[in-house]
Image (cartoon, rainbow, N blue to C red):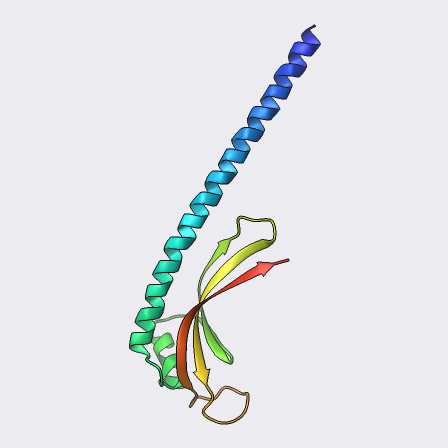
Length: 132
């Protein structure tokens, strides 16, 4: 009889633990979604301010000078990407999502290599996921 009682208690403990873990996971997901939404609005403000300070037509070299003056790290390729923040993902497919400000340029010369004379055409938010 005691074995049945002990087994029943063990099953109840496991069920209660699973319920608690599930609720904690759902609360973390909700918090992460809220944090991501807030960050996205702040990053959109960053993009808007950047566009005021480096309007369309600004040369690539001037944009880089601006970013250096702001002490921002960036990668320079066809577009200039400023990494704003990385967030873990709450799902099973992706590990994380990274928010970037993307400075996009029209080519000053014909060709594919970026040039210091390329002109800024747009600044936008870009979100890139690290997914399976």
